Each structure stands twice: as structure tokens, then as C-alpha cells.
Image: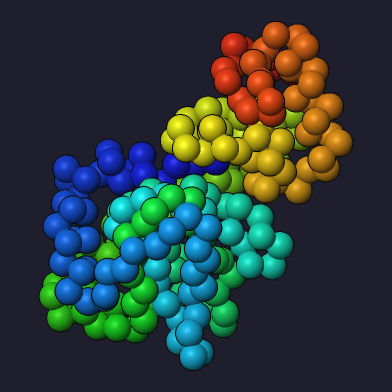
Length: 212
């Protein structure tokens, strides 16, 4: 899956996201969270934005808990579907995090008052880039290609995720593929020497054939 933080890292020198997120701390209360916490983007019929200052998390689709993206601080979740009647995503933390929740309308007013609409637009552009890359890797590809894309994604995740999440679990939570189909492909790739797996954990990708 596409790593949103890599885009921010490349863009940071030009767009000064560090200053932007520092100033956001004046708008929302910064809280500390533990791994496994869930954050909904609605409260009392008000749409919320989740501001991740530090740490990592997952963005999941509410309807079926499909994992759409791994996120790393700093980033904002909740702008991409603001015109939907109800939010269709939920955030869950995978590490200790520093975060804030802010009502979307208050975020927009704050951006207006402080002349930060440009920065907010850059965040939306990055969200659009992430969504475009997500579609490229998951839509219109074969089951085998999808598994390969997700294996490559897993190999670039932080050590904490790679050491605690099996390849099967990682792929299954990020796709609609059957458990048996995933296991069959992983087993064939392991036997063929294309990947190294130990106790279900991906240790190394040696090479992935284009067709299998």
C-alpha cells in the first residue's frame, strides 16, 4: 500500500509541513494514545479531522474494516471525504501516538484566519496522490499482482509492523482475497525461493516473478 509519509517527506522542504503542524497544536488538544486505539471521525453529528502528530496508524474503511493505508505522523485524515454525509473511514493506532481531533469546520475557519489555506490545499493534494497510488496498486490488477504489491508494501513497513504482522494477515486485511488463495500463493512463492517467511512473518523478498 502507498506510504503517505514518503510523499510528505519529499514535499516538506518546500511546503514547510513542520511549521504547519506545530501551529495546529494551538487549535486542538494534543493527546497521547496507545496501540490499538480507534478513532471515529464523527462526534455529535459533526465531522472531525484526525491530526496525527507522531506515531503510526491504519486508515480503515468503516463498512468492512478494509485497510486502505498505513499512515505516519505528521498527517491529517478526514479531509478526503468531507462532502460525504457520513465519514467512511476510521483510524486505528499501531504504535504510541500523539494526536488531536478537531471539528472540520473549525479547522477551515482556523486556516482562513491564519492564512493557511495554501498549506491545507497541499495536504489535500497529498491525499489525492495517496489515493491515486492506492488505486494503481489495487484496482484492475490480478490477484497475484495484488499479493505481490502488498508483499512489497509489507517489506517497507516499520520493524514493529513487520515483526508482529504475518504476511497472510497483512494481505488479507488490505484486500478482498480469500485466505486459502493467499496462503496457496505465499506457499508457492516460499517453496520456489522467491520469498523467505518464518513463522508467517515476511523476512525477505528475494525476487518476485512477473507471472506465476
